[in-house]
Length: 232
Image (tube, rainbow, N blue to C red):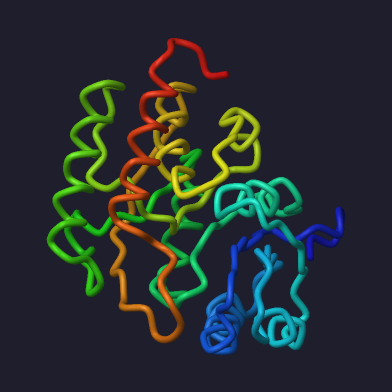
């Protein structure tokens, strides 16, 4: 904790839904990676039926609840966070805790938002079938074309934010369109954005929540909703 304010320097926000087999390894990895750093972990659970919450409580994390979808859970956690640097990540061990300091460093050197990318030098993925690769490339091209961005990745949730930048994003997406909304609104708000190489690992255990065609449609609707000139 910051001795003057009593607040953590870093807040890690993790939406969860039935991730009990992964929670211990994930939270232990975060604890090891951020040892010696002032930080907090916020779990926002979407109504898990397994031991996700009880396992998380053993690691002295903050537990919030929201069953409206991944985006709603992430927004709730980010807004509740106390840190000056906010980090979002998934609970399925696809995001490696040992990459977190790169995301933190990006904010500390002056960027407003840092986004993990699987498609720049040093990044990669062990968990993306060809249909999702093609879909992601199409959406990247569409967002870059419509909004004058220069992204290499779009639908990836390992990211960091400066606290002040969160207010400018005015996030509203409840579901899997949340990462796309962040990417678009960061450009529209004139924020300083940097991509960080990230290696996406396969889900270790549990059931994937992503549904390719359903969530592709959600992403497309998110892009269309944000085509107006304002940042409402």
